[in-house]
Length: 226
Length: 79
Image 1 (spheres, rainbow over the protein chains, first blue to last red):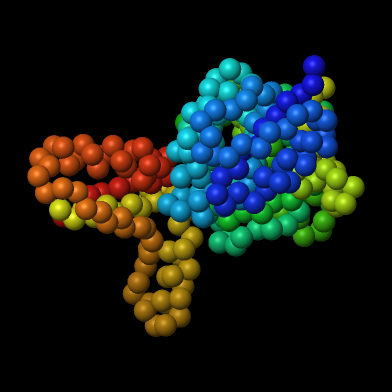
Image 2 (cartoon, each protein chain N blue to C red):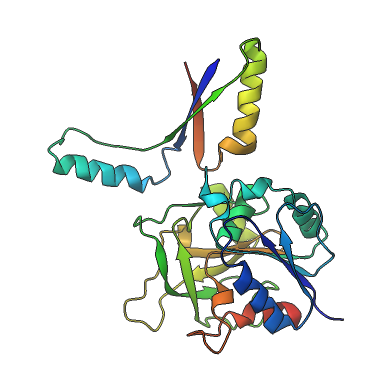
């Protein structure tokens, strides 16, 4: 049975096309592109909320998109235990919906970060099965509000439930940093308790093709389809 | 009636813009200005005939549903 997926486009999304190509090339299955004003989603295995600046980041990043019409069906999709992946702005949207815990605040150094960064997996889940322990992935980031914050109680529960999927780490570049944006415990991506929803700041859809500097982003889709 | 809602990051949350504003003010000689934090103000009109309870309830509900992210922010209705 072929793997079906969908990418939601909001006004201001700018990684939706990359996400569509990423899914088309790696899943070889049907990929739908859904406008945020649609009322329903087709039945698919994976939905991606892509990166960008939905609604111009008005009010807070992801706040407006989290109230879009399509979101009711995105929540239903996730409640049916199907996969939901939020990348960058998509991660911010997932926290604003409340499907993932915590919040993403301004980067500690106030800079917009657009560069390659390095991450490794922390706890195992279906999104990172194909990634080895201690394997360092090179995946780009492009964000201003990627500094993951949660209170101590939430952090404890994220750890106890093994919900931390990825953390930033040093990589092969001499100037690479341990924690690029000031996130609590260098968290780069988390899942929900059931581990069918992943939010991450780095962009795996910008690291899969031969023309990308790294192809490490492939491993996420490979993890889901194998 | 005109409503003003002040939204700010909770005190334990890093607010880097305030820090930079403070540095710039210090550079201009305002050395007495400390602990600067920047927030946001939302102004809106509500019908005058609403009771205080209705008004409070509507504002609270709008803040919880959209205007404020209570993981990182707190709000105060001014005046």
